[in-house]
Every structure is written in C-alpha cells, then in structure tokens.
Length: 121
Length: 198
Image 1 (cartoon, each protein chain N blue to C red):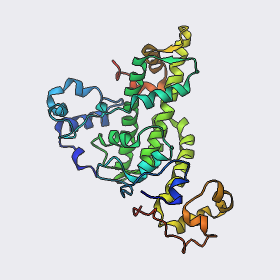
Image 2: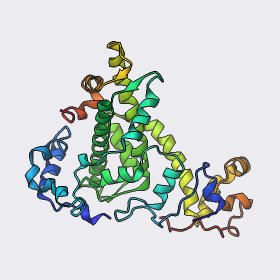
Image 3: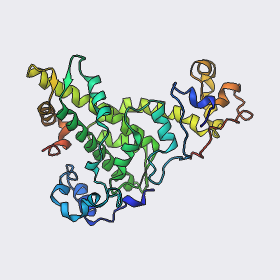
Image 4: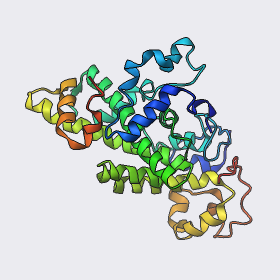
C-alpha cells in the first residue's frame, strides 16, 4: 500500500493498492489508475463496470482510461437529465414519486432519447 | 486486451452488422429473440464464455438511484421500477455511445478508443450539450492522473509550475512538485510510479 503523499492528498481520498495497470488492461477491471480515479471520487459510477460494458461490444478492442472516465461522467449527466425530464411528467400527474411511466413519456418526447425507444418494451 | 470477448459468436457478428447499418440501436432487442443462438451462454456457466450481452451488464442500482435523487427535489421519491428502468437505459446509453465512438475509431484506423472519440460520439448522437462539461471533467481527471505516473514528473511539473505556490499546500500535487522548486529531477523517490503509464 502506497503511503506516499502524492496519493493521499489528491482529493482527500484514500489510496488503494494498485495493480500496475497502465492504460488498458487485458480484462482486469481493477486497473490501477481507474481504481484510483474511483478513489478520488471523480466518478460516482464504478469505472470497472463501465469498462465491462464497453468491452461487451464486439467492435471494441481497447479503450483508454480517459474514455472510460468520460463515459462515466456522461452517464451521470444522462441520468440527471432523464430524471429531470421524467420529473416533469410526474409533476403533471401531481405526483412526487417518479414512476416508470414518467420515464417512458420522457423517452418518447425527447429526441435525444430516441435510442432508448424499444429498449424498455 | 480482452481476448475473451472478441467476437467468436456468430450471433454477435450478426448483431454487429445490424447496428452498424441501422439507425437505432438494435443490439438490445435481437438477443431476446435469438436466445438459442448461444447468446445465453452465460446460463451454462456464468463467465465461462464471458460473452455477456451488453444488456446483461448494469451499473449498480444504488449508484444510479443516487444520481437520480440529485436531480429531483428532496421531497421526491423514485419508484423501484423507475430506478430499474434508468438502470437499463444507462447500459443502453453506454453501449450506444461506445459503439459510435468505436466506429469512428475504426474509421481512423485506430484501435484504442480515446476521450476524443467519446466526445465526438456525444456530439454526433445529440448530446453535444454534454461536451463542454465533460471537457472540464476530463481536465480534472488528467490532472488527477498525472500523479499516478510518478516518473513523468518532468513533463508534469513543467505544466504545473505555475500552480506550485497555490496548489502545493492546499492541494498537493505529485510529490516531486511539493518538495522541489521545480527541480523535479532530484525528488522522485516517491513510489507512485508503480506502472509505466504510457
């Protein structure tokens, strides 16, 4: 376990032993820097899982750490966006609880979410 | 490189063709109909073939729910099926962006998807409103990761030279910077350099 200053102070997050994984690894989800990014609380979603998702695509061979990280952040933005959009429908229905149908409505109404149509049938 | 998930499954190849040509994302649909074409391999021994379909992989619902909660008023609640729905949408989203980025990567004859590819994909797919915020996050990420490299402090510190005075005490950067006045050559005894990053 590294006890170096550089690790601990990054953003207050504790260090974790890294497995010497530079950029891309051979399937080991816990790549060092990626895990470190997680530790630094830069991403709220597990980067290893995101990487697994990316790799599930047969076309994808390698993905840089950065790309995994960016997707993680983009996903956060996406979740916020869709929740907010769905909320509008809940409010229209005078509800405080976000329900599945609110999401369905949002997906139908918003162009950017067109790719989701059919996913949730 | 994940050799396991390389396309050995014919059905995956078929799917690849579909969504390359299609305008919307078919991937999630097809396997449900083609259950007997080996896509349910995971039933035989989860992980043995490692051909997990993209829609089998979800991000933890707790994380997803937490982010959703951030977006709605505190008094709001989220139904469980709504959380699950978003969870699925998220996997879909990631796959969607990834495949677009991957395409571009191939077009440019590169093997590794990088940050730019993702940003470009976002823009292409109608999420260009994310691009600027993402660039900011990327910047933070890069700065955070510089410390991981350890060895490359020469390049790092040169860039960070100006921040030395401010950052040194409030947000300590790689050790080399902390102790050195920019003379980072001497300092790198720190063991951050576990890996030879790039």
